[in-house]
Amino acid sequence: MCTIRVGLSNRAQVKGRSLKMKIDRFMNILFGSLEPLIESPWFKFVILVIISLNPLALLPQVIDALIAPDVSGISLYTFYGFAVVQTAFAFDGIRTKNAKVLFSMIVALIESIIIIVVVHIRMQ
Image (cartoon, rainbow, N blue to C red; front, side, top):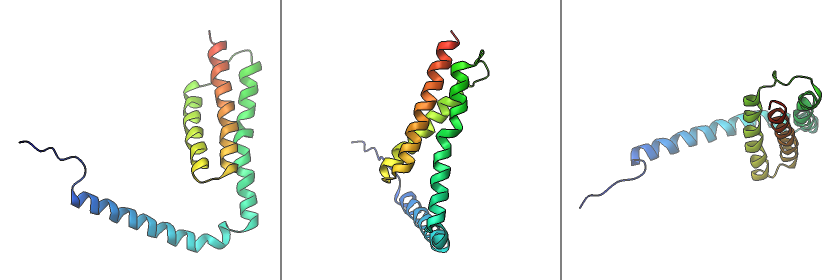
C-alpha cells in the first residue's frame, strides 16, 4: 500500500514556528519602544487625517474620468491594482474592527470602481 504524505515536515514546521516567534518578538520590541508615540492622541489624529486622504487623493482622477475629453492617459491596470489593495485593506479593517480604515477603503474602492467603469465605457 502506498502512503502519500501531505504537509510540511516536522523540521519545516519547527522552522516556521521559530520564524513566527522571531517576528512576534520583533513586533513586541518595536511596539514597546514606540508605544508612547503611537498611542498618543495627536498621533491617532494624524493617522485619521492620513487615512482620510486616501479617498480624497482619488477624487481628481474620478472627476477627470468623468469630464476629461480623453481618458487614454488613465491606466486601468493601476486602478485594478488599487481595487485589489483597497478590498484587502477593507477586509483587514473588518478583521481588526477598525471602522476608519474600513470606511476609507470602501470609499476609495467605490471611486476606483467608478473610474474603471467610466474608462471602459468611454474607451469603446
